[in-house]
Image (cartoon, rainbow, N blue to C red; front, side):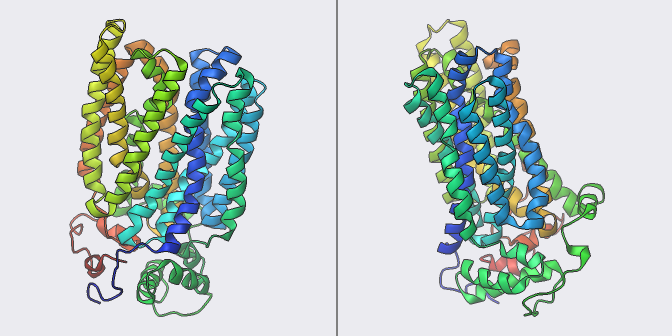
Length: 498
């Protein structure tokens, strides 16, 4: 098959696949909202319950610790019941957590609500990018798999706006509406998701070829593309490429169930699988070890250190953080399939090293001057936005695209689940320790530390993360095999469009 023979515009985004990815990304909007709204809600929760900084850190970070449970459970759950129903479970869990937080008569009950929502976060972060990746073709997979991250950014911005809108309400009412209102979209998503198709790759893994073929034709631009993708998946699973049976029996050796998958991935991986696992865990580790959660969750604290002391003005300044995040996430989704994952990552980390260092310098000067150096205050705010800008042009969206596409189908649910678990662990570590670290080494010192970690991340990405742009999901193991990771990994790489 020669390049360009299967469709006039192989890079055209399939509207049905795009619609499916958008609906799946709704769960990410709800999670993003919960993250953004808590930034401002904590100000009022702390006032009402008179809690210490330590308890504030626990309230902020407990969601991500509980997300560990959700992410590890979601991988196995999605392999058993399918990607679609796993999104339903995530929505229902979010619904329960939002209701409990909106009720929140005490700090303890609010903490329980955050825990419940955290489990939903774990499910959502694992399943949304996996579902989007599995219905996409290689030429548009970066864009469609970035949509959940776009959803998170939209949600964070909506959370910030909610803080600003409801901050004028009475203390006991305002923050409860901020947190509880997320239950409404969770309910609608749980119902609406049932109209979405199942992942064709998951259906083939279960031997349901007839259903997979019907869906693949819908998410492909033409019949030839659909047939090509079906043959590639069947070959990867171990099914005869020319098999047209509606139902086939899948050998136990290729089913992604049982302890065998854990052992094969973690204890006895092949060289390429070990490299994939290191890359997947590493990129999730560094996404939050570089400190973005400190900027997103504690932006009001950063602005306070920079001289913005009025709560209303602090919240308004965080809206700027949300707008910056959304703007550059959208730009990244347009670039990721053109520029590639690797270039965006390296550009992103290089910019973060510079802006995190600048933020550390300017915050230190602003604090030591007692707020008298106006230029230091202004540059502190500008570099805060700069950190958010560079994070969201690369590291933020690429993390989720990359891990959703590199694991072989048999290990995808488990592998992505482990990556998300590491992601949430680092998120919780940063969010639950940032105030304590800032108190120990100053806020500026904390950002110097994050700049140093970013340098390590830049080196890691340069040596361990190969480019995956244009590759099919079925040829990722070849990409991660040293000596075969060239532009001509296989004849299909040249085709690139499927």
